[in-house]
Image (tube, rainbow, N blue to C red; front, side, top):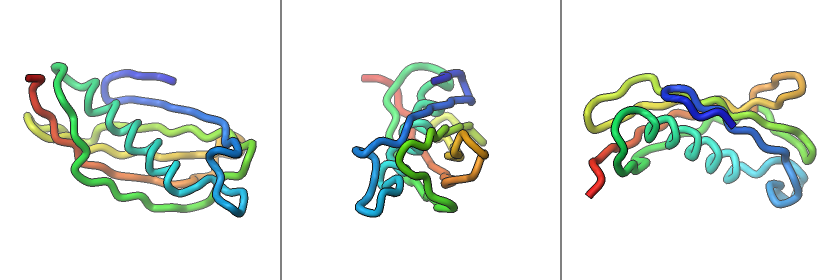
Length: 112
């Protein structure tokens, strides 16, 4: 795991708890990891506060199987005072195949 402003990298090994009934990485897990990584990027940028995901879109490319190691690299493409636009890619470590790409919009508010 790497957590830096505008640059987050998460990684995990696909286990049975991540798989759908056919033995592939479940799409819901892909969305969860993408949203988490993009949320970290938004939260790490600037002052501490509350972050809420407003929108996430995931484009699935190739799957990952049980035993595959997957990395999710997230970046921030733009930030205003109240919003952060983020992107990420999930790739299999071995071979670098693109599993999915995602884009998100997060709302940033001050902690109260």
